[in-house]
Image 1 (cartoon, one colour):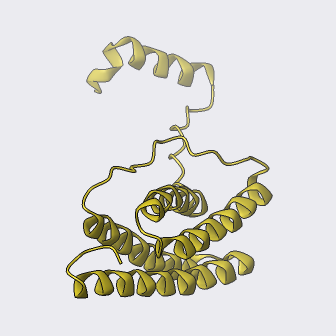
Image 2 (spheres, rainbow, N blue to C red):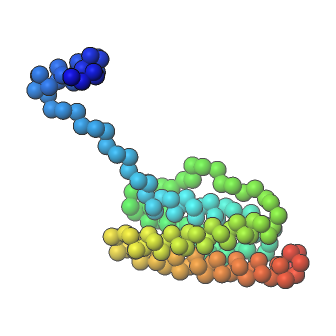
Image 3 (cartoon, rainbow, N blue to C red):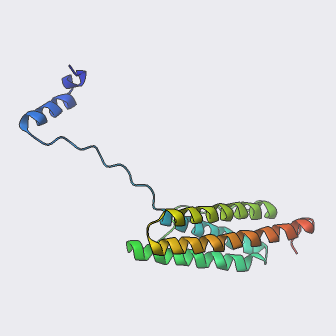
Length: 162
């Protein structure tokens, strides 16, 4: 005997079986977050962060423009996929720490995203997304290398802005 049969919920379940009602289905599993949306959010956050960096370091301006182009590409893909316009709901972290630390933070984020783009390209069944993710992975790796060059230059000159 099931002890839950003595509760109100247990009675409702027994009564539904007696009446011939179909059993209740469990609630659907929550969907995994869309990788495209996550990449879009990350590129938007990165663009805001690099905008702050470019105000402090002129060498960051070309990299900031590249990030904005990746963001715009992802934003158009999102609209084509969902019909929704993207707006970043969370606040971006644009805290200003030491410049070298902020550059390192950006480098690590871009490097990690390049790897995730490559993984997403291998996992997706959509050929257009696969091609886009592969290209974005390549662009992000180049971006990370350029950030590494800026960091190396600054370290060679004692961490000062040239």
